[in-house]
Image (cartoon, rainbow, N blue to C red; front, side, top):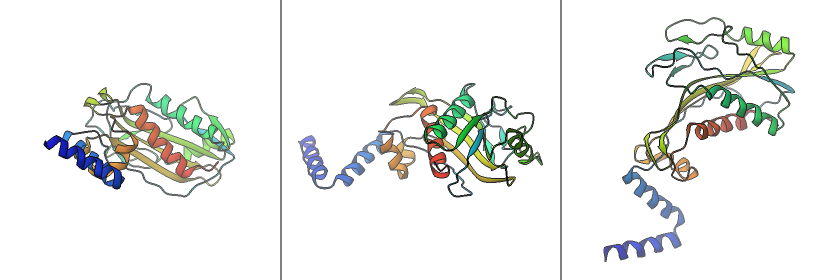
Length: 238
């Protein structure tokens, strides 16, 4: 009898108040620990820009990040990240996606540098000073005769342990991205993206992401694509 009443109530709500019905579904997941998403951190410093020629440097995997408790500083913007395990293929995947997105959206002429700049801008541990700034990057850009340089670091890239609907450990990533104006010798914008997916019961406010992900636990690759797409679509003008 109780099940029949719940079913009738559900039909009534779903037919007349669709949005409220979605909230009911979210509440069931809230109680059952369905996947949601953690807060993301993105920091913008400029509006959309257009450049004729852009050099994409390989997204770098900083050294010393095997210990999850390690604290690392980005040598470009100075932001502090909690590092973690990084898959060996992570930097290449991020670089491939950035290059592919820029080319598919026809954001000027896109060049890709094969060599890293690890020896030019080494990542430093917390508490150490870094005075190199973006000067070496500007020089690289001038040597390549480009208008801008996209460069970033990946500090954490841990895939989920489990499948789309049941995990022992969720995906967790952290990376940043910077666009440098070679002609003016200054940084145009910088963004950081961090997320560890959590059960909806831990983060009910991100219901939109829960719905967009169809209630699934996403992989680190899927999470990274979401983050990069949001950053590039916000700042890069076709």
